[in-house]
Structures are given as structure tokens and as C-alpha cells.
Image (cartoon, rainbow, N blue to C red; front, side, top):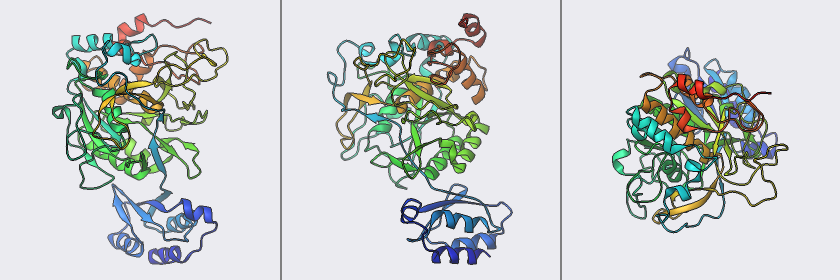
Length: 453
């Protein structure tokens, strides 16, 4: 049966040219009950099959229709499920990056990092005081896995290391794109995200991270153009969870073969990896994406990760931010305001607020660090939440063995209400408030004011 299945796959003609061009890989999970002989036969018959975590990725020959190939494979007694490989990309909207006075802002980080200190920032300074008072200064002792385009953590050749991310605060990572390589960042997105999370404080350089003493586990899952595959994301999630990550940062978005946005949990392989991470006590934070979709993310598997949308300097939903029913809360992400009728924070027709600024480099120039601006999108919102989660964990206010659900509940409960009173479709529970989140739960509830009406 198994050999026959693969023989048919190789001989099938594509039903449409579009299908043949779009589905070139299938992710296949075999049944635990499958015998070694059945597994071996299936793999021998496949062209280019390779193991990625608990699943296998099959490369489809030219002219083979992906949908029909999957149907044939599912008839095998050895196969539990199949799904097409889907693409992921960095969930940000680049906007002409430029320097803002060199690597050090003359007037201090507050003038540059509105997302930490402005009226619609996350109240970082008070959060730092709260965490320090509880013994968790700057997220000390917490490890955050950054699944992205890599992080520039060491100098070599054309690559330079950032002074804001000392090597002493990195733990061993891995390059899932180019196995055996260093995992250094050429695209710039992962390095910028890591700075938002964990850039050093009080070092007279650059900017400051939300969790400026947390450790970073750099996991390269996106290539030099910011693109990747969902099965690679699943593999990296498992790796991070099994190697001591406390928080996983996913500044990524999934999309279909025609470019339409999709919930990251659409991938069964990713869902299984997220469930594994949750069982191991890992907090996972992911981006809603940047297509202004009202259906993404889905609520169906919402408990597997904290889904974060993006807001502007004015406190309005970003013009790009997806706001599906699975949205949990929002965080600063820059850009222009969405046109939300009745929301006084949305200044449509006026100049947009500032984008997110920090230390980084332009794509393709990993040897030229500077203080750059021009990053916007839900990719920028996620590291603010990941950093806040690290502060909550380091503070110990939820107990020594806080579960992912406990951290998510604390972040949602303490969020600042935006838009319509209470939880709503555009802002979820509201805007991340790191200061309130690092306050003991009982005290936070006493201070929370529920709008009337």
C-alpha cells in the first residue's frame, strides 16, 4: 500500500498550473502505531523526504498536485495526517529606516522610545522598579527564545556585534535555515526585535530593552529576505521549549499560497509544537499580522499563545494590525492610525505618530549598527509583550512556578482599556501595561477601574 501510494504520487499530473507552482512540499506525520517497515517503505518511495522534528517534509516532484498528493498519502495506514507547507514572514512593515542622531540619542532614551514611556507606551520605568523590588531586576534569570532572522551576537567577517547585546546574555541557539552555520542575522529584523526585548541599560549606549537583563536564545528560522517555512517554525518551537526557554517570541505571520493572512495555528504541525511548549511551561507570544484582517487570528486555538496586535503613538489600532476574534491584547507598534469610527485616539487625516526606534542595521548591512527608526507592525508589538512577560516571571509575583495561563491572565487583566469599554474586537483586553502587570495580582485588581455603561 505504501509503495503504491508514492508511485502514484510521482506519476500524477497536476490539476492546475497554479497548484503545481504553489504546493511544492507536504508535511507528513506518521502514526505512532506504524511499523518500522511501513515507515521505511514510505521514505524509500518518497523523493527528497527528510525528518523535521516528529514530522517529515516531502518534496513534491514537478507536475504533482499538492492536494491530490495529500489525499493519496492519507490513505496509507502509516500516515496520521498531512498538510501543505506554508510560508511565514517577519510581521513588520518597513518604512524608510534612517538614523536618529547616531547610536546614542543626545536627549536620552525617553525621547526616542515613546513605546516605553509616552502616554500610550507600556509604563516601563515603573515596571522596572516593581520587578527590582521583587528581586527580578530587568528580567534577570529569564530566557527568551527569539525565533526570527537570527541575532547579531558576535563579530565575524562582515558581521558586527551590538554593544547593547553583550555575549554574556546569550545562551546557545541554532540556525534552522542553514544547518551548522552560526545563525547570524543578515536581514536585521531579528536583531532589532532582540534589542526591543533585552537591550542593556545604563551602558551609555543606544536604547534600553523591556527586560534588559534577560537572556536571549537566538533561533534563526527566517532567511536573508525575512521568509521561512511553518515546519521550521514548529521545529524551533520544540527546540526552545526543550532547552530551557521561558518565553518564545514569534514576530512572524503565516500566509496562504495566494498571500492571504492566516492564523499561525492553522498549521497542525505548529499547533502540536505550541501544545508541547505549553505543557513544558513556556509562555509563547505571537503577532496577529499586518493585513488589517478581522478574521485573523482565529479564536479556535487561542489558548496556545498570546496573540498581540499593534497600536500607534496616538493609542489607536495600527492601520495594518489584524484584529480577529483570537486577539488577546495590543502593544506599541508604530505607524498610521486605523480609521475607527468613534475612537478619539484615531487621528485619521493627521500626520502619523512615530515608528518604533532602536539599535539595529539596515537589511544587508550587518556591519553598520546605528540607532534606527522606521520599523512598524505587529512584529514590534510582540517583543514588548515578551519583555513584560519576562519581568512578570522574574518578579515572582505569580509564584515560583507560574504557568503560561497565569502570565497571560495577568497581562490581560492589567491591560489599559482602549476603544469601547471592556474587551473589544479591535484592542482585545487593551494596551499592555508593564507597570500594572508587575504588581501583585490582588493589588492590581484593587486598582483596576471597570468603565461603567
